[in-house]
Length: 116
Image 1 (cartoon, rainbow, N blue to C red):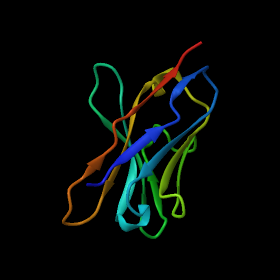
Image 2: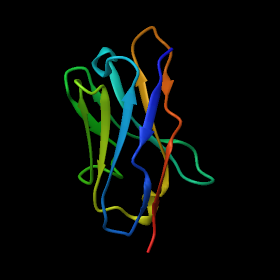
Image 3: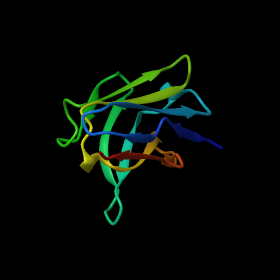
Image 4: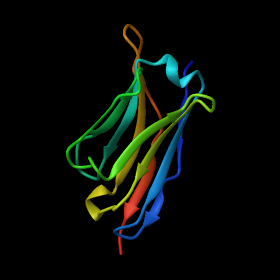
């Protein structure tokens, strides 16, 4: 059973930074893609960005230039570095991992609150 465990959420003021982590129970590079989603109160879950097998990344327009996704294969960990945070970034952040022909795996989520 694959497990993804997020950490690093918290409260931060606008303009601040946070780094989220997602530790996988299996090799992080065994997935064809791993990434992040978020869900704000009363809204649908939305895609934030992904990193693919070859290391390419892709981001939602709302976070491009402010957020960076990376991974550490030695630690089986996915990261989301968030900078220039805005109140609109407040949400529960989820990591996701998937490969062709396998289930889509989700973490339990970590809360990020941006407020003055």
